[in-house]
Length: 428
Ligand code: PLP
Image: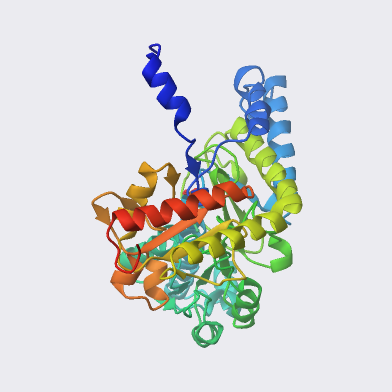
């Protein structure tokens, strides 16, 4: 790197450091995770499926990581299928459970065609638990595209009906609507533990009880929750659960699907049968170690920090509403992720605002997959009943460490300056 000129050096020193407020999108890899994974990249690099000593060392590390990771999510080690992250985990759960149903239907049809009434396939399919599902996938109307698009894929290729369960004005799942649809039967219901766009913590335990009461298995997307709020996979009695490492300090491209042994599921990646046959391919041992260490660290920090984190979130909300009285908080004001504050700012687009805030060193998100010049309204806000114009005025602040008072003041002042610069009516 070339040496900076004196002017460059002094202006670099004078500029305030950027405030990164987009941890719901991704965050820095923890030092402890990097240090823990290093030996498995440099010295203990064996393939965990190899029988020699190097392989055994790698396998031991993989299983230790699995056990630690499971414990921090209230799961059993055998529930954990390591994947490449939240998107893959959602895909595996939704397509895998639906394809297992297609396999059972095919087996029942073949057995019926062969006139065999008592083969094991036919008798397995005689179990109402296994056959009663119509090809329907229930998804909450605020799911991440990794869920919504997986369900759509099942519609496109296998004719599954995708039924969207509505939410209220704060993005809470409509449990009565879920119950009505679950009672009509479904292959799977998909609910998220915490919403990525507005931070609302969803009534997942009730959703699981309702769906199980109707014999419908449940997939939980816990990508925004794991490492941020307590997650208890077995306690919740969910059937599958998606987790992503880069939301809690592991490198990107790492995650897991938790799967109960009772849940019929087909793999999407075929090969050597690693990860209980559900995700073939040589495991990323160093990645699994990083995942476990980062999650453990995040859970310890959560215990210490969550009260302070929620207090600084509430202080940020107050400061923003004071600086910009026209702003509105989106999502549940109380039952929301502790480091997540989201708003709409009438009279501006989230895109314009985030670009202006970025120039002022405040890095936020509009809460949707957003690229400059291709700004879509966040789906969660539309599902909550906001108009397209209102939904496009959304901004999300997300952070994993409590904010200093000075930072809160800086954010509120920058926000106000941006809105003035963007000529938003009513702000002077
Ligand atoms: N589900 C939710 C709720 C998310 O917020 C995200 C990512 O932001 C994903 C799934 C996808 O996770 P990944 O980025 O690990 O693919």
